[in-house]
Structure formats: C-alpha cells, structure tokens
Length: 233
Image 1: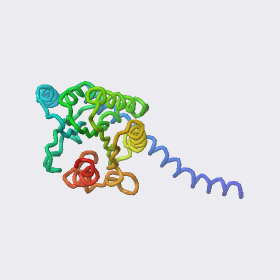
Image 2 (image 1 turned 90 degrees about the vertical axis):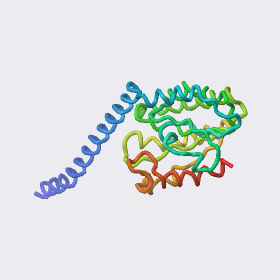
Image 3 (image 1 turned 180 degrees about the vertical axis):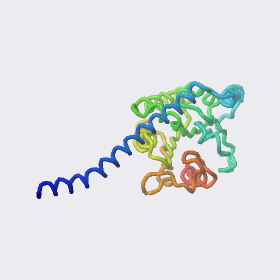
Image 4 (image 1 turned 60 degrees about the horizontal axis):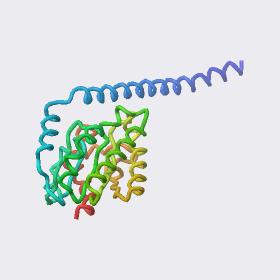
C-alpha cells in the first residue's frame, strides 16, 4: 500500500514536469521551422527595394576617408549622419545577408573609407541555427575582403543585438558575439558591445527599445549611439 501511495505521489510530480518539457520542445521545433521559412523567403524573394538599393550603391561615388556603416535593416533604418552629426555613409540594406554583403562589399572599399562599422548577421542566424560556423566563416570572409580592398580602413564590429524571444536564432546571438569578439582581437579590429546595454537580465531585448522584438526604435538607437560614439570621433 505504501509503495502504491509513493508511486501515485511520484507520478503526480513527474507528469506536470513532463508536460512542460513536451510543450517547450514543441515550441522549440516550431520556432526552428518559422525561422527557416523566414530565411528561405528572404533568400528566394528579393524585393524591388533590395534590388534598387543594391544597384544604387553600385553607382554612388561614396567619399574617400569617410565613415561607413554596412549591414542589414538594423543599419539601413537609421539616419547615422544625423544621429552622430557626422558625414556618415549608410550602406545598410534591409533583408540583406552575409552573402549579399560579400557580393557588394567592393561597392564600399572602392572609395577607401577610413572606418567601417559592421552590423551584419541578423538575417543569417535563422537559416543557420544548426551551424553557427557557417555564419562565422562568412563574417571572416567579409572582413578579409574589406582588408584586401582597403588595407588602411579601421574595421569596427558591432555586436549582434538581443531579441525579444527565445527562438533558436536568439539563443545563438551570445555565442556568435563571443566569436566576433575573439575575431576582432585576432584581426586587430575594434569590437563594440551593444548587446548588454539593450538586453534585460534574462537576455531578451528590452521592450523599451523595439516595437517588433528585433528592430530598434528611436530609443534603441540612442542606446547604440552611446556605445558606438567613442569610436566615431
């Protein structure tokens, strides 16, 4: 009788735990599927905005010894020259990936900027959540292309930003940032950590800095400005 009572007590404890585990697993695989689908759409359906901006960047002359910000929508959406009150060239492109930046990096190095600030991986993580090395190796290739095209350019790597969810992509951000910090040290580049200033204690993106859990709002860009500004001047 005692064993029966103990067995019932044990089952009462374990069943809720098992249920929570199963729910979390289902959500994990659901997030993976959603991330993969989003990445596939961006890759296979480049819109007219992407094409227009990419071809525009191809014909714009740029400015020698300028400051350039290069990346995806997180760069594209900000008015960096007004934010810093400096003549900054924006080469962000919404929806862009590492492959896209590798394709168009010569558009930047051709006019020999003095500084480049990179914020580049947000759209790559969803499609590579099982292989972070793929993202990292593409980043290394991008750095190498910048150095070969403009050896005197000072490269600044801005950390990837936190996200408001705990999707597979979100879970990889801190690991990727550790790799980017190490790469910066190895290649004599400047690493700029904006992650900690934007994240809550549990590692999520602070809701005060974003409307959609990924992109910055005005307050978010002000936080980024504070971290980046010492390297602009």
